[in-house]
Image: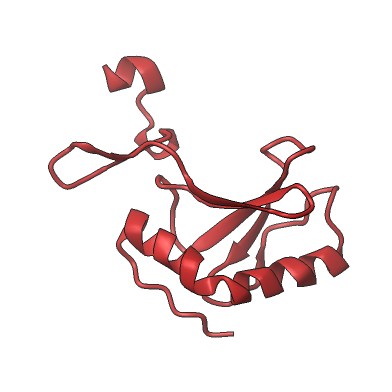
Length: 116
């Protein structure tokens, strides 16, 4: 059933499975914030630990990815974000680190410590 619905590349499925093969999460952990942005940890994501920050008015593919261990930007800034906004997002990740790291640990099993 899952192969029919989501295809064969399990890394891209919108869900995660426990060790017995049962679905453990269907959607991302997330928090909506002022300014139309939201922060998410995807259950089927890959290391290193990170969050995706999306802006409501922009396509989901144009997100900011911030490392949870260093609070550094991973990849490039999308067109809607500038360096000033990046600094605010990095502060947000530091301020809410306990929450976001908890989401990562819940979905991926890895304990995350902020080194920055």
